[in-house]
View: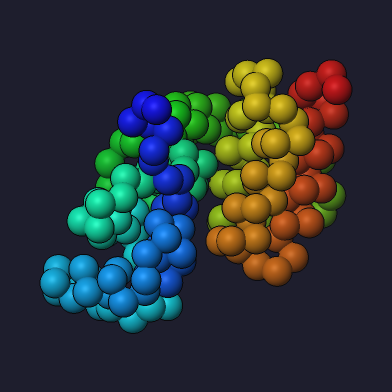
Length: 182
């Protein structure tokens, strides 16, 4: 078994309770690590990626942040602050750079199919999820259209509003018809 196959994939932000569930540990174990690091140990408070990785590693579990989650977090930082904490590496970095390098073209395509919604009027998280999904649809034939759209919907359900999942689904599914021949 390779080292990568032993890693557990987690989102960029999750609660101590969710981290404990993901790494198959008791919530109290995660809380103890957080307390030792002088961090809040509230089981429902969100942890950032670095803290979640550090806590899991301390408990002997290797975790990896999901690339789409990390890319979304960095795009959010870029849009709200004009900068990112760091430029992510690997797949997340390729996604972020791809979206930022093609931003005008992506936004033009998104506006062409989103009735009554300019990109500027869309909730910040939703527009970045759609941008990520559209860039993925355009940049490679893998993963499949269904996977890209369902992952975008999942991101919207986690990080945005109750209605965002269906909105993201509708816009990306429409865009996919013009981007991919499926």
